[in-house]
Image: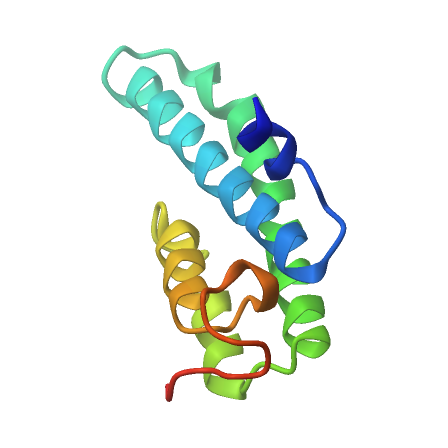
Length: 119
């Protein structure tokens, strides 16, 4: 249960970024499932709600990426990678894992404070 409460702790830029990155991936999954229902099973209305929710979360991810980049002083390259990661399904999860491993997400990273690996 501790892990769940840690996930909903939004007290820092890195934690807010992680939350929205995971949320963006979940809405991608919902949209992919809805597209199956639309294109394979013929339920044309299936994508209406998941599509709208994913669109809202996508915009939130772009906004939180820019805010996090400014607060954590990401380079232009890291910021661009974060923004591009929102395009493919589950790319935000891949970016979040990479950013954490390479010290770009502050307290979520294993590296000492202020130290990042070369990008």
